[in-house]
Amino acid sequence: MARDNASELARRLARDAEAVCRHYLSNGRRQGRYWTVGDVRNTPGRSMFVRLSGPESAPGAAGHWRDAASAEHGDLLDVIRESCGFTSFRDVANEARRFLSLPRPELENEPDRIRSRTSPAPLGSPEAARRLFGMSQSIAGTLVEAYLRNRGITALHETGSLRFHPRCYYRPDDHSPTETWPAMIAAVTDLNGHLTGAHRTWLDPGGFSETTLGKALIDTPKRAMGDLLGQAVRFGIAGEVMAAGEGIETMLSLRCALPTMPMVAALSAAHLSAILLPDTLRRLYIARDNDPAGDGAMATLIDRAQEVGIEPIVISPRLGDFNEDLRLLGFDALRAASRVQIAARDVARFMELAA
Image (cartoon, rainbow, N blue to C red; front, side):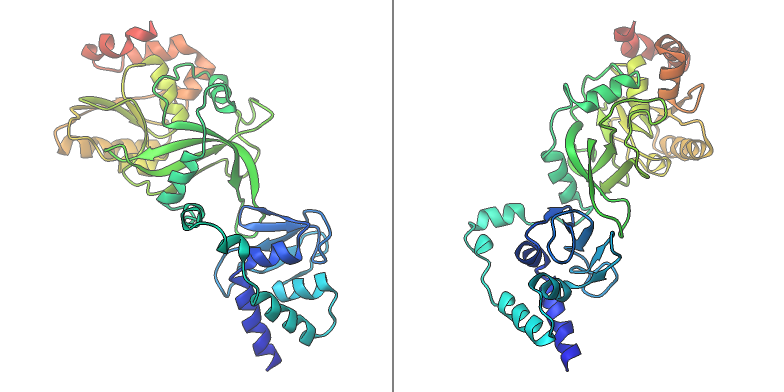
């Protein structure tokens, strides 16, 4: 019976895990989807992590915690027991019931409009992507601008789809604590310009190096969220002509040589092959990456373009991608190679500003 009572109390506490942590672990603070503190006895520090959200019954459930320093772990009943110094389950249960009966004045006193504005969006959803992009700032004068320029990209016109976030959440995996890193945030939009997702490139706050090329020293410095299939990060407004490729840096590098050509970055080879094509499009430049995945995307996109009467033209880098060409071979070499690969009628139209 006591075990059943404990399970039910733990589940109820987990539904309000952050409030429990704020009350009993007041020396900690929230970091992403975790509450961090020194230990289960409310010592200041950061070695203990309490999961604030998750399924009701799973290893990663809300309310479960682990102390990386001591290897201790448990649920929120253990938090109450240790932080209050109780020795009997009866005392722990009574305290848990007392807490659960308390009002939440910090929520009840807030106007409805504030509660609705700050309610969490589903993780990885288009709404979460819109909020992330909305809370980010212009790249002008930020680490994002420095990152792009250090990669040789100087044509930063029509880059309103890019923004800077100084402390963007990053979580290595489901069992690791949330970290914060500066990041380049890119808006993924549909053909009508509606934001459907966001792409994050976490950056090294220490600056650029040839080893990392300015990206943060983490396992996956690039991740996307939201609805991505068929959509893209867009630079310029596509009309009869457009260039499409995989990476943001790749397409911005090519845009240094073709500064007035509208371009889109699909973010991966798989998404490039599935990109939606505007009804106005008559000629599609496919900026391929020089690898097997790039070859596959190129072949699929050629077939799709031809099926709807769009002329496909492939532009290939000399090295792995166009940013490698720009950084290692130089702007003049990239411009010369691009010039001979595009249609003659497009040279004057799209290359004149790069002269």
